[in-house]
Length: 467
Image (cartoon, rainbow, N blue to C red; front, side, top):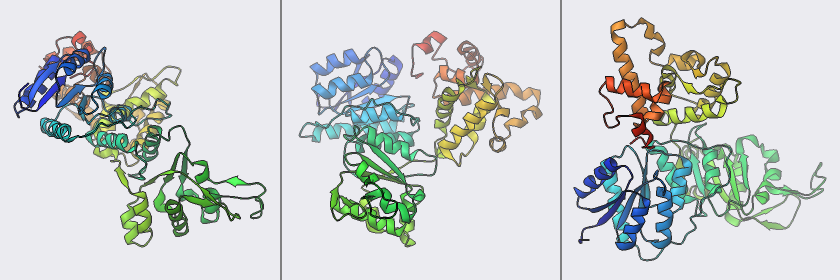
């Protein structure tokens, strides 16, 4: 190849592949293309590219499989992964396996060019290999974060990077955004994953019990201390210690915690002997700790110890594109529990969910879907199954009966386009959101002159990314 920076673009969708190649060629990259992972491996063994851009969802060799092969044989090669699906599992796995970066569809071309430029710069600056562990934890989870918004994907990427280190992490965000789930994801994908994850809610422990709970006690140290008891910090040794709502910790508790972080040891109540503890501390707070410091209610030196890496989880109202994915996830969880399963949302119900501000964030959304499923009398969740506070925020959907008949066609077209945009062009998911079959959706798209890139349901089925 010439002296221009070279990029291999891998995508089993010809239209996407050529579009990406053209965009990169126009800004001065020399671009080669591969239609699948196998061809990409063959070409990478023959040509030393400066970077690789690969779709994740390909068969039979996925982008993650390709990443795994290339990281083993070419550890210095920066690899950027591309997908229409963003979830904590996918993002963390990609970053843990050594991906340079992670981009979601629909692709912002300015972001694409900037990312690939930095990848090439990284490739040309790197001196040694990268041998950090990249094995993704396959331990089962009781819950999962789901989202494809750019803000949440950035969180996932940061989790993937920080999980490999020993650094203390401070997670900030409103109640219900999933701070403990992020902490568990960091633990599950760290070298400490085989040890315990111990979570403590700081607002739930009074000062009178704090020392005993955290440090433990010896037999006879106080009335009622009939046996030796290990504290939670000692139980977490070798693993991760999660302090939820650390901003609610009293001044006494803050001082005791700071000493543990500084010295790496604890002393049980009633004992003169110190016990070494090896814990990684992850703290979380719904409150702004800098404001608490200014108000004299939180120790600045403790914040420095906790805030080596800061992760902010955006509220749900700032990432409305994640709401349909989350709603479907919770519907799948609770819908099958009924004798007659609830399988989908009506268009009006989904529009109401996406239009609501969600002050309780993901936790509130889960409760709303669970409640709606419990009350639903049909297989499709309707507007009337949702709580009244959500209907009031629905921008007048419930008043559609007052519209003139002549506007119904325009309303139907608008709703189809909204759902298609919400599903990022994936027609199978769009049909599910609308509660109709894919064939019906195709008839509507033909009627409205939309979606000419897919002439049949079979074409959409062949493209699982819906790109």
